[in-house]
Length: 384
Ligand code: MLT
Image (cartoon, rainbow, N blue to C red; front, side, top):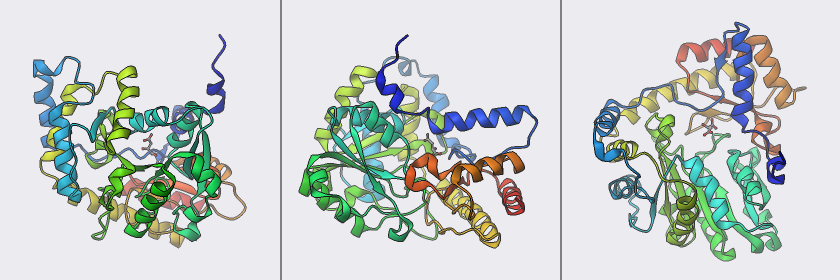
């Protein structure tokens, strides 16, 4: 077999490698505390699982779904966006159902990039932005997310010659992996920049509902005129504790949604209708679980932040999302620290370098584990 050259350009998915290491250690009988992947341990709210049970019993849910998503699901997305952000979306042209936001994000690159085209990609970042650029034959131009800039890209540093050639730019706030947030000033700057250079601004809003102390993350579509240049991705995964559902949405600029639909309708046949029916309940039903969920995450954040600070680690306290991004101790690379931590203590975290070269020197902790496990993990880290 001769593999395509594009395969050689991308590594196996970050968590595929991490899972292999974890399984090998588990097989040796090690008590692993998995603070790796951001996979909520809290239950999907009952009213959503009940809606899913009912939908599975509905024979109308078994067939092919409409390619762009059921109208009911797209309407529910528009309803949620209006309720949450006061943004009006046309469910017919500005909303598309996705098999999880990862799928839609990856496919968008194929809709936008011709071979050699430039994509402006943050670093460190969710690995999909860069790998999908490479798989689509594009060229990633990295935007360093530096601590001194609050982990926001410095748009003024992008050379005009690059900006003129770029087709799209990704942003992701609340941010994975750094835990940073963006205010309206930054989003306005990003919209103005993309308008000036005719770039599609792509916002990954997966973590918008996990926030603390009254902070409400913004949608880029709240910026006046943003719809002319922006699309946004959201997912039910983190908001409703259902990563396995694989249900998300792309919203915003209708030309971009249309371009994405050309790719998607040719490569997949949509999300299982029973999930979309449950998704309608999730988006239009009670959101009251969020208060409890965010209280739990805030308490966990405090356990980790206070414990690690006491142990001498340097970190910023995140206002949103469920990731903590401490610096590795002096004398370590990210990979060396993470592998020594796992081997000696059984605590699994993610090396910052797995998110890009500007992630070197950091590691990521996900707080999607119970309090006792987080306390035990902090104790083990401190004792390393
Ligand atoms: C993460 O932990 O970064 C995400 O949950 C992983 C993913 O979505 O693949």
